[in-house]
Image (cartoon, rainbow, N blue to C red; front, side, top):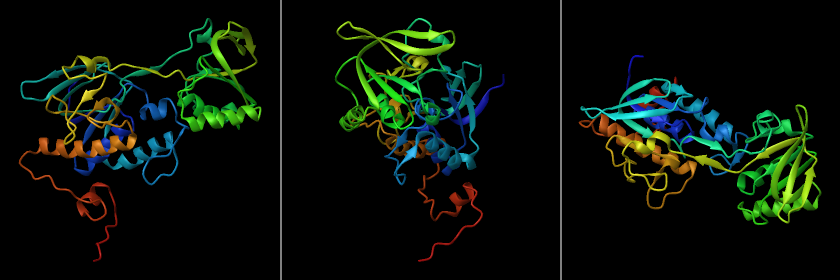
Length: 348
């Protein structure tokens, strides 16, 4: 396979990685982007595509998948090259200061700069470990909600006690015939407001709360018909359900990135807050994968980081050129890059 030469390689196609394409595109910098998942969107698309997000500027409420769709529309003018369903496996610094990056599919990049936007790294949901579970995974047992309407009339068991579990209890209560919420403890890790709303659903008879652990599946052939539960006091009971959602969190792993000679703090990469550059010149990190004093793991924070990283990358690629800030509202150059056909002059 021939080597792909590029100025920027972005690792991670979540919302921050996608927005990095946009910020680079405004500066006329083309990017290639690699992601281990078979589709773009990161956690937003993989784990909670129909979960609403409320803290994106100018979007009082937006579904996670809609956010990804909008970002893809926004970056369309810049024709980024996507390399999906392949994991970055190796990085080598070349004598000329550039980097050679290899993926699990054998794709080789020769790049001047790298942007790590890999979030928590390659991740998998923590799976339900019960005999026979493989037969039902992806059908009656799932770790994400792809279509809320598919749970209409279902007798659903939701396993977990964090924000994702409680959010989906609240979201799916109007669709399901009944929801059994199973959590190992009486205390929940979710937001108190969500717990209070869940209690209201219990009073309305839409949700039943259980404290204990799933101990077995009840099924007849290929049809899941129940969940065996062992309560904390040792009592065994059978829940009459036909669908299970498991929200036990993720098992994050930086994977090969941890072996690249970067400084690592609690599975995150320290960066400066001027360029969001790591200790290795030319390698930047944005989004959940980075850390710095005051870091907040928010999508909107990642957007800000991507903007500053783009300017730093432009300065590195063109050290003899002055980095100019242009505004999308008034700049004819940016309008041209965005493919706008009509450019209105600013009236003063």
